[in-house]
Image (cartoon, rainbow, N blue to C red; front, side, top):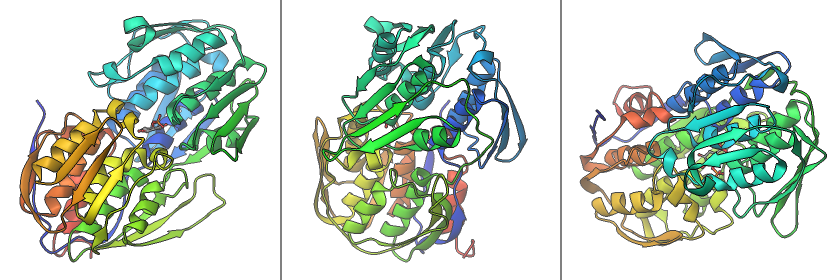
Amino acid sequence: MNQGHLFLPASEGLRGTVEVPGDKSISHRSILFGAVSDGPVVVNGFLESADTLATVDAVRALGVSVEFVGSGHVVVHGVRWEGLREPEDVIDVRNAGTLMRLLPGLVAASPFLTVLRGDESIRRRPMSRVLRPLEAMGARVWGRKGNTLPPVGIMGGPLRGCEHHLAVASAQVKSCLLLAGLRASGTTLVVEPGVSRDHTERLLLSGGARLQRTAEPDGSVHITVEPMEALGLREIMVPGDLSSAAFLIVAALIVPGSAITVQKVGLNPTRTGLLAVLDRMGARLAVSVYDDAAPEPTGSIQAEYRSLSATDVTPEEVPLLIDELPLWALAAAQASGTSRLRGAAELRVKESDRLAAVTEALRALGVTVTEYDDGLDIVGRPGVWTGAAIRARGDHRVAMLGATAGLASSEGVHVDDVECIDVSFPGFADTMEVLSSPGGDR
Ligand code: S3P
């Protein structure tokens, strides 16, 4: 049974300094890339959430041992690609889209059958974008509805390097094909039409992969990889997840009296699109980077309440804040003027149809929203919302959007499913409580 919760107003604002759990994207990659390294890989700051634990179970099913040695500290005993074994059963990725997209690439050259299933949301996620190019490289693939939907099967085998031109900028698709490319003969080229998060490239480079990434004048990104036997990762530091911090930051921006700091958070420039957009809206944000040279730049963000003004999010910006767009819509609902989002059709195939979910949630709050195939128009109305009942649709980010709206309301917002928040931000309600309770960490 899913549990509902009423998120109450933070009538005195949010105040204090907090850290957020580890980055979900980097945590998934640490386990997957650690599995094909040539020995133990120590992961610090690992996110222990429903999604990333599905990835741990998946590599265990492939014969890799993973040890939890303390909170956020994990050792992955890498076995190189050669050491991966055929799973005895179907692998259940549960709600983890990143696992569903990356794992087929990891096993595409392994001479055995891997079958992947997932929950109701996963069964609606398009898979031909990874299955078709893997087939072109030489893997045999199966999927429901003509190889387009999960469950999927991959029978690995000898792969040849290919050129892949992606229809949309997608870090998941890019990562899948780069992983397969590391085990293909010759060079594999992936061309993305725009910039998407580059955690895979950074980690593969630090694991010794021969990878080259060039940004072209037309905005596209070309990435090549050459074959290798095993990655040489030793230690991975996972920063706090900016996508989780984003909820605290937006809450502080829209709840009067707020001033918060989030520390040790990832500031990879391919993830900070929300900060740039909020800056245009007049947000009071101070960002400081601790170490720019580290594989993943990390730092702190201070956010204070301030009235916001509308802005448009352009199609080129979309991949840089893809997971924060529902939350941006909430900030836009509190900004003066009409904000427009276009080029975001990908939001329809995330954990839920996020354009529909956001439209429904904002309308429940009394906000005027027009929904388009690939975006939204949001008529901002600064001021306190009364309250609402919001349907999370099993989507962690929609549930946290509802919670954030509740803090800025006068009577609270009821969210019908809060268990799904554990997919990315275990401890979310406690963190919000600390920031919003008088006498908390101030
Ligand atoms: C992710 C990439 C994004 C994002 C998802 C995580 C990743 O998807 O929405 O939550 O870890 O690679 P796409 O870039 O594939 O759209």
